[in-house]
Length: 422
Image (cartoon, rainbow, N blue to C red; front, side, top):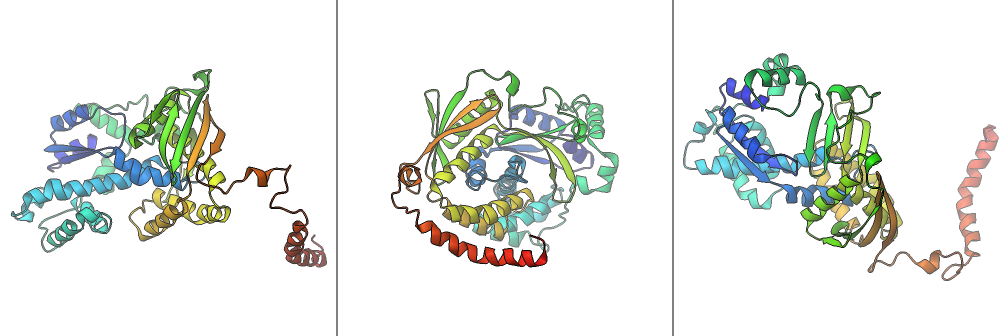
């Protein structure tokens, strides 16, 4: 809201856009504040299902986890928000102006329109529904046709960042201009909330040696005071995607409903809190705290099911090349890239046989797997793995196996002996 007020002060006409990606927020109140401050209009779009289907499910399928800890909640939301902004630009702002001179629109200084144009070009290859329209808009919004467009990104403008060097300056500006905000000098840390998680950083959290303040966490209750009785949950997967969640006699099959149910169950039992120092794309280390109940539960369940139904070599290659690289691409903002498309196609193929269900126990911050099964996949054989059966396995076969694998190891051992370093 502070940047909205600042842009108005600079003479911009501001059209606000808000993406509902599951953040716990009063959208009517936000819209009322924006309009009261002087915004020309405000568009709010419900993107929760799109967010789950297009970003969160692939993240679960590849067990995405940045640097072994972070489940990418904020990073995953960015592509779906950017894509929706472009759709709004095309269908909400530009198309209603067809037949008029586009230069008229841009003389009014629509903030960050050039950034939207750049993303629009990328989206032409991503959204089949928009391809024809996108091509036409790119042609009509080319430099020779777009009039007096100017990109304006306040955080890259010296006049802005010299005036507002941090959150305390913005809080002071809000107080001076009468802008109601949730942050205070007593709680100066930043929060970014969506259906996948809530993140907390900056302010008093910048000292990594100190624990997070009491009462900070919003998506998880304190594990120390969580119920003393565990809760059992069963999750069914089809092609690596959760299609059913059941617990305490209730079933959820709708993607949004089952995700929200897992968030609520995980919150009650304090599941999914982490406090980490991560490496940013630009080379800076940053302390971040995150609580991600549903994502934590789903990732653990999916990871476990793969142990039962996914071929070992396929899993190894997926982990080395797809999971790691897909995760870093998402974290670094490279969703709209050919390499992400390439990796995701490999991911979809790898998940064709990830079918089955997993049973979990949630208890005071812990999420434990207590069973897994599959009615369709047959890679696991109880008889073959039994220590009381020799079906389809002869101990004699191991002699040749050991001898073959020992050939190069013997040579390596001999070399180390000759070097005197064995």
